[in-house]
Image 1 (tube, helix red, strand yellow):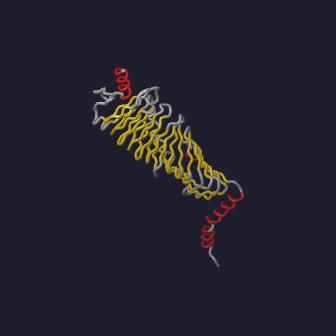
Image 2: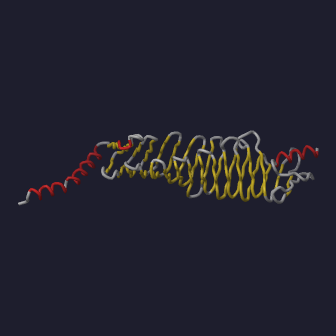
Image 3: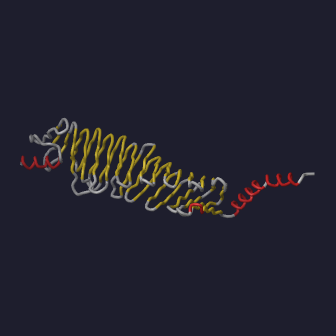
Length: 298
């Protein structure tokens, strides 16, 4: 016969497995909602899904089917289930994800939540804040600093006015509205009727705005083209932009009713030549000085 001590030991060894089976069975039959009130200072955390497996001790969980994870800042909905931890608010959502937090909206194939301040959107990632949308195969986003970084090439930053910037990699500071782009940069400013390209670029859309193109730089506006080692176009948000150029500068300028000016100026601060007009310093604005030369010649 078993002693009372043996009976109690056997009974305790079956308590946890039995409890796990009951929870799993209940989850299959009924929708299951998990609440974690341990983060009351920052708001509640909840997970909704048709099936949830959950370890109360560790906070680890796994869901099946459409899953909604909520916290005080926002909501993420996954079509293909998720893994999560309710204690540190980490998770991995699958099967197509849509997430919203304040004025930030995200879509991707998967979403990795490292904590409530840092995420990775993986697979056709699309992050929108205000009038800007950043897309790439993967976008890492730090919510505390509002800083986004693309990974995997084919990065693109779009504005609601139709302007866009493409590159191999883009980082974007949403607070300062400054984007740094590297690798085959191309851009278009639709309101200014301007396009540009370069090896790297700095794009600032705050205030009056400016674009700086570095390495094999080229900018075209209304048919007029400037190339050089470095171009800076200012007042890109205003009615008239201004361009400065440095290093091996070349200007192709179409004046009204005439053939284009197509001459080469070498080096920073070199002369821009327009229809026999010389000694035109490219700074501060090439187009303005060429137009003045046209008026003088007329």
